[in-house]
Length: 476
Image: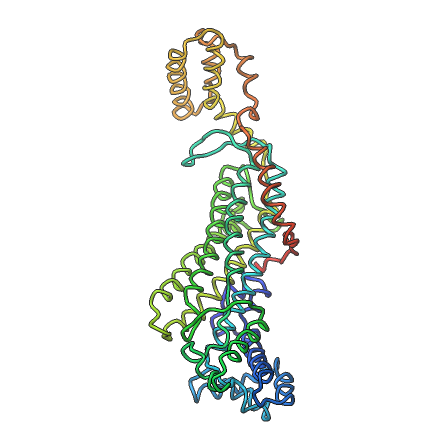
């Protein structure tokens, strides 16, 4: 077996067949033909001399793309749209003269791009809600389990495992709001002509502005769009920058989750799923590398950086259009969608198989909680007649010495023993142990989780009713 040419890893290894199909040649060129048929039908309905037989002939070959003819013709003409008009005309000799009537290349090119973007965003939304549903279940399950919080990756006040998951989930909620807005406001290029003035269609309809407007409405509606852009030759390239900005946001949220999980795996508190026969390292057989989380970070980085290309394209378009957008769009838009699709598939796979280690979490809490209890200890000591300022200084001295013994001598944290032995506090070790229940230090974490899920996440998932989409098997 020989594989002499470059294979795109996004297609070969990472994304779903469903997303790959949206940006496939079949989807693209069948959509071109559908748009030509929609245009012919609308032009016929508004009085142009186009016959049912011509439209039926076009319908007959709508999905039967004669690629070789188009490729051969493009080598001669260096024009992809006119090559496909020619190829379609060879299959439909009776309709040859009315295919692409009055249109410019952007009619099929740009409108198809927008149809692909819409389909891609809808699939990304479905994937995103699937991850959100999984994270919501995990967050609810562990809403009350105390865990050590971190600021600057230094031990901080306790939170809960579920509350931390709710923070990951909230990032995705913000992404979903952005995605929903982009879908709701996405418009169509429609039937606009060479520089967006509709002059060619005004000529076809003998100056009848109402018919030209109705032609645009009919074609846009047939493609599933209610509104259109006012355009030059192309739809605004700001749209591409806006869409890839949404994809970049999703990638940022996924990367944040995956980075957190990689750190927690190092602490042995949480781990991604690890298959029975999975190999963590070719040399170190004991290792359980977080390879899925690392892949999320890797692909997310690609999406985040790729969003810059459409932004630069939008910033450098000249007047009604230039063609320096085309080659860039062919790569940056599809690959951003393919990579985000892969990121979300891996994200859901990881969340569905998350492994929690309560004893390791408890062990770290036990090592750090004495330091975090000191405010509560001081308040209790004040109730028993102690002086707040003197107690604060005593806690500072005891904490520094206990911390020194842990770091320099490798000993267990003996802060509570030091405080129990200090008569100024008036609290014995049993009294301090009674204050060691971690749930006393998580504040409203559990309640916040349940409130967030009930008020924000559950209604959203119920509204779409697809939050727990079918699992897609990871390729690698």
